[in-house]
Image (cartoon, rainbow, N blue to C red; front, side, top):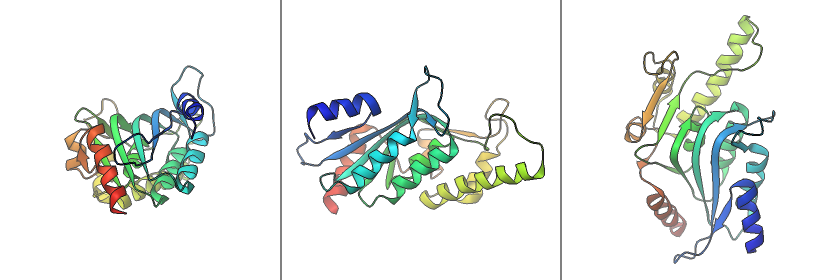
Length: 220
């Protein structure tokens, strides 16, 4: 990869390849920041992660013989459920070693994204929020709407339970917790609390995340 291509990728998509290290590992850096944008465009002033940008980057990394592993940096307030789950499923399906690092927030659909990697870290001040699904726009007050909400929540709960040490029952309980989030249901976890609940593997920052990923690569 040329420097120009690498610089363009970093500028346009927040992605780059880390390759100047003593272990001679080539690591694809993928950043998930701001709000996860789905089929509808967010306002121009909003910081977003566009799934149509991330998915091709992940496919390219998965297929590139010169890429040894993927490091995903997460600082997101959540966003589009369908787009977020699509990215999470893509990461979970990659056979190369993957590590996620929550450096700020990993809220809402950001929880499955952090869970999708083979191993995950969160900085001591990082936060994760689990809450019931919310839909924007016009909502029809009918039993079918409630059923649709439950279906979406089941997809999220099922994915998190399958990729973490947290049970379905615990995830649902955290979703419906009262009194923690002002005027809302849900649970906020800070740093080690996310590890204690089984959502994240370890507390640590970039040094630990890179070191662990390189060890995973060397074990292949």
